[in-house]
Length: 244
Image (cartoon, rainbow, N blue to C red; front, side, top):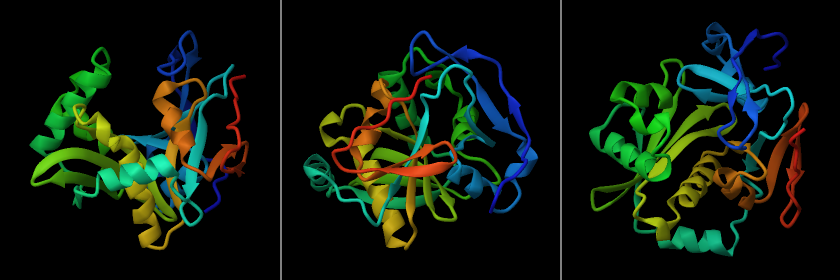
């Protein structure tokens, strides 16, 4: 689908959560459009993300640091560290579930937020806010559960789109750092996309200088959205740095 003139609204300026000292703004798609079949998949292909029932992308006047990235799954080969991570988590069973509230998911989410982002609003989400952030009523969203002997280790939330999966959010047990569960979740999504014969695993935004986003550049080859097209970044090639 080719998008020509879908209306957006520009949000208020706010402190950037990724680059200290910078201001950020978001462009939000008119909610009526996201319900049109095929539109959200086309938006993802053009670098948009979803939060709850809203699709958005950065619209910062003096910064272009948020770079959409995606993995061409047919060409992806894990590096040595990623292969170790895959083997280390071979004891986990993965179950695909619908986008519904589950007590143990929510408890794990709060533990994760308390460990990683204790001062942020996300650490204080109510059950309704939590599910409203991860799911919405117009999108086919899946929760991948990672368990061992019934114990929940991680949950990866992703949207089904026409050509692959778009990662929404992943949270995991903060006491299991040695497992590298965030990396493992991405590796699993890549294999899931490959298994069903689709092309892309969309990872949202990569930002140079942001520790929170650094893991994304380790998946190679990678594609970045530069202007109106996707550009490949090969193994060993430096990621572009765009802030201004």
